Length: 142
Image (cartoon, rainbow, N blue to C red; front, side):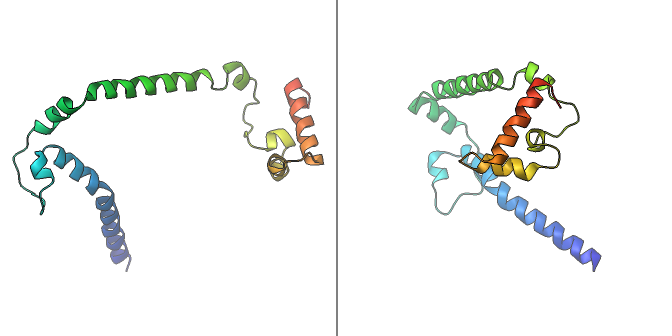
């Protein structure tokens, strides 16, 4: 029975993998077809690969300009993300070995209180306690 379950899981895993990967494989294969071959019905499974479609893309539009814009955008967004990340002086001041969840601000074992205070729109005793705890911690007081 265990052997059958293993075979069934393996077959299911391969089926899901092929279902996910097949469109990507088809995309790559289609890239090496001519335009007529790519839109042919029924699809042509056997063909002579060509780079014609890649040359056509560059002739129809300024593809390299768009690719350059994408690279510039990704580099700038990465640099901005690094610039606005938590500064080292702040993260080094955090206590070592303490999980950084709501317990840090509301006290050990009080994550639910911190979570409830964060979800409320109006001030409550929990919000006040959380604020006092965070101010104490920032000042270095227990």
